[in-house]
Image (cartoon, rainbow over all chains, first blue to last red; front, side, top):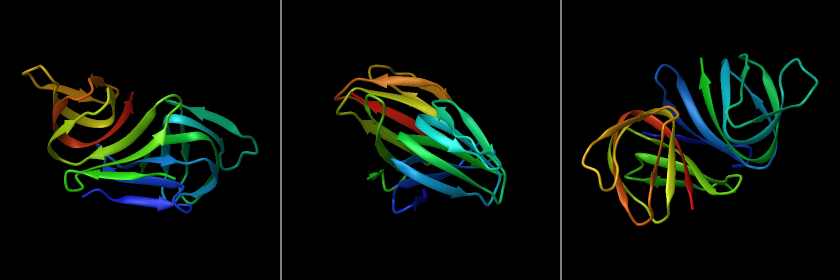
Amino acid sequence: MLNVNSYFDDNVKSIAFQGKTQATTVGVMDLGEFTFGTSQYEVMTIIDGELEVKLPGTTSWNTFTNGNQFEVEANSSFEVKVVRQTAYHCTYE
Amino acid sequence: MLNVNSYFDDNVKSIAFQGKTQATTVGVMDLGEFTFGTSQYEVMTIIDGELEVKLPGTTSWNTFTNGNQFEVEANSSFEVKVVRQTAYHCTYE
């Protein structure tokens, strides 16, 4: 059973699955700007695309593209500007 | 606008997007055995998971896991046994 979730008026969609050791999703972000909240510690890896990301506690935007990774603590939020449609992989702890 | 497609009684789901140069999907395969047909040349990359794959014109099964890639010609088919739930990235030409 594969659950699909939609966020931000269907501008972000993801499919949940069980990774080797962690709950995991793969998803796609459409063009736009989004603020994601976290309920768990997350590690996000860009599969294919380009994001500008402002991580919690920082004031600068950094670019993340294929293979780049960032982590976000639980109960936090991060801002994303999607430069081109972007596929991502995310694990949750 | 992000389109989600389902195949094999919802045991495979994918999200389509525009990659840098190619039509692309990311998806997840649930446990099972599936025969995929191709209408275009495809390059499939395993993001996270493990598949045994029998490619067209071969009689052997080979294992593909994170980061591994295979290609399949248009108008062909390949067989997959999903060892654990597997996220994949696929480009189409």
